[in-house]
Image 1: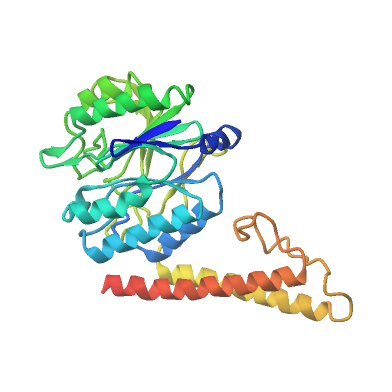
Image 2: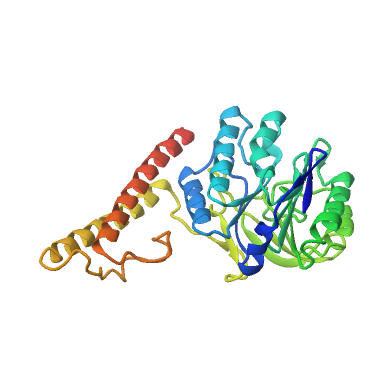
Length: 355
């Protein structure tokens, strides 16, 4: 099919749509990572989780930096490029913290807009197709306040009608923005989207969107609820944060697949000290197991199967299976030690941010 980029037609193959029909929905949702005030060890866990699944999509719903500095934008761009290089599809929208340097922001999200899964993009907005899942990601931060403009709605409707529906008639639509349609007065101090009726009546309801994914509130919320203006039924997903600015709610990211049916919060130790302690305990156990097994096999064979069913889980081994031989176990111990070195570097970086 053809897609239009900067007014020019470009051809893109259909192969990236096909795997979605034979695969499954699988995505990671996170918002307000606030690079500059973030937890680096959680960011590395997000990358590991994304790289572990070939069907993975990562949705970053705004406030990707803390104060729009060149260093912060460089770190975000490196993160996006790292994910894309690993075969992960990245969907990204900016937030209110990201507009102090507009040119740097455009350069930062440009790699995401160049992905073959992006069927159209304009300004900070994009439409991304992954199998039968379609993400309409629109910027909600404007000088007049948080809102989705008329021209953005018209553009999204046109792209859906002309480029998405003909290719994916049974598409499941996800709307992505930084600001929420809803505001819980007891929990949310941040502003919600203004003039939401226009968005609900002209885009969400007529196109039958499946979910509304947002950030800004720094807390995880999942509800099958009504749009506040017109009552259209939709799944609301408020993504959590990785930032140290979050003092009231649990930090982390969401994992959502057809297996879990709804987004689930990935739980991690609450601070870097606990995280390092858990990692070191895992390494110590692995080293002890490897040493014992190596000693036991000196009088037999080096290809004996390791009895490690209680030690290893599918989450520990990124390739999806447990080490089956002494050699494989020793190799994985080395990999864990390398990860531990990365964690120590992350700890130092986190402490520097806190200072």
